[in-house]
Length: 383
Image 1: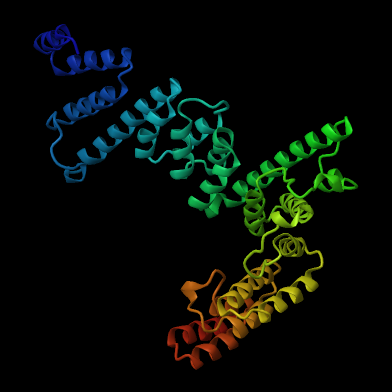
Image 2: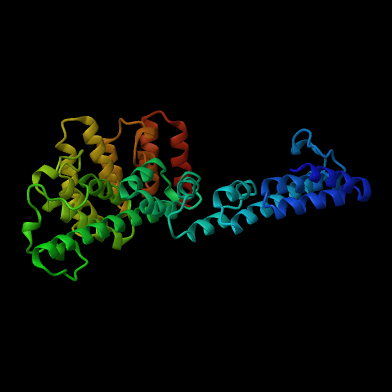
């Protein structure tokens, strides 16, 4: 601040008093777009209004009522003003701390949603959208636009978000599928001299075995594997269909691109396709029997347990709770609940409405609390 500004403030205080002087200061900061200083000025104005020391001493929580509530409201108003001013200038990263302070995530989410083109703020916006969970789906979209799907997959794994997982998953599947469509069409046009109209991977691949030579892959194979692995959590039928197309594409690749996976998805593309079809209710019973054989075929107990948990997950998706209980009893009984990637045996019994089995298991294990849950549930169900 220039020396004459100090003189102006001192003259304003001497001639008009503290409140007009602070009004003058706020106008100066507003005009010069010094919004953090404007925020602090607003707080000083509120402290003056409440008869508090102009320089804040101690925590707000130490203030007596009703001054505390009034001051907190002043802070909220000042934060919203500063944040809104930053947003008006298109500066979302500097607006975010003010809106975060007042618990308003929706305004920032809307601003991020409206972001169309990559700009110098992009990495900061991604951190807010994904890292701060303000708008995960849009954040992932910005990652794809700025850095590509490889980085998006990494972000997806680093920032698990159950609430927004489905939308993010659909975005990953659709993005990779669309990239494959473009690349396959380009290869076909180079070979055949015309771009096919199809937007389906099976239709593009049909009758064109020449597409898949020993070294031919049209996207990074690891991306395909990651996305179909994530797709097991999908509920959107359209996105599952696209993931199945990715599996069919993978099955056409030469052996050097078809590495073995972890049980029960040893044959990555085939096994994932069986599971995804089963999620859609297609060939469900054969899929259940298939994954049962996967469990008993494992020599490694960890692989067997992993396979059993995958089958439990499939059974749960189709609300076949009693069958899930049986799989858990036979293959997962010795694993602590906190080490499972699926519901525990007690939880499965509760889902199945089998309080009798829950009580029996709890008694057998000397678990009085689990027994009480079973007994109470049984009593409630018989009323």
